[in-house]
Image (tube, rainbow, N blue to C red; front, side, top):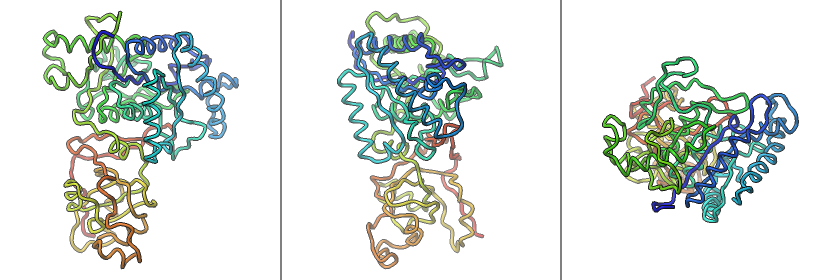
Length: 460
């Protein structure tokens, strides 16, 4: 490697990039090119993680099934068969180039516990320090809707944040994002650089393959997650893995000679954004094209959410909602904990030390129980918290002083409903906050965040 710092690069491949949609045969040509690219990056001193879908697709071929089953136990059984074959395939291809690999299978439950999250993070760190290429997949044999990441695009974004990656490459069957569907409109224009996902005007109607669970919309969600953690995210064509090296090389060349950039380039007007979106990388023998391969690059957030706060927001599935008043919100912003006096209402059923959504509402005088029905759906989620009390306990102590908790409950485990260290906020200056979908792989479930700052409760 000719100088420059070591990069950590996460490469995500969907099922359609790994197996043929009709025959379910492995696409060895693409996989071999991915392996060659990963090994070249490794030889240049960089760290590489691969997030690989395809277990069920490979299982279909092994068991000679024609289509993906709908019955969950049958699908999980196919995943068990296919994952064995899939990791063997990857290991065999990397073995030709003397590159060791490791298998890491995750579900959301595996990282819901902070200790397990740190254990997974430490395992990644040790493997990368050893020069190993970790190959990550969701553990479909065990995962059900409640503990799924939703799709491997989301898993790749969380993995990228966990390893503090510099780049996340989302490999797909199109070159980049377009303002219109290029399969229907020949005059569609590519979107090359995205600074603010909230203002993105792209056609995301392209669905995933019959074997996969994602589509272009899930990649936008993944980009939101990854960029919020400071990771430059790139969408590019999976059949051209060499794009990965060429794209990074081009960005390095742009950093070395910023005057060569056209003035209209979105990154040129913000030197800080330019320095964030590129990394010091010189690849031995890599050509630096005058024009990069077609791709869409999402610039990282200048103030990323890291480590524990990212885990609170995106590593945990919320089990309910706690409504707080504006005074409690201001106290939290000043680094205080959440007191029972600031809690207005609670929704859902959850236990101690489980994650909940935090929603700010305006406390009005003489509120009746019917007034709360206006905010049962979280219209403004400001963040997440790990709570010290169960939902039934919070329902009893909401609005009371901390000194009265003992009287109301007969015990007082803590004066705080949630400690400040167990609370993390979404970005307040952006109307499009990162969402972490949870589901069976269908369209991600989102909680819309309107541009207002407070949800109103009107008198009944």
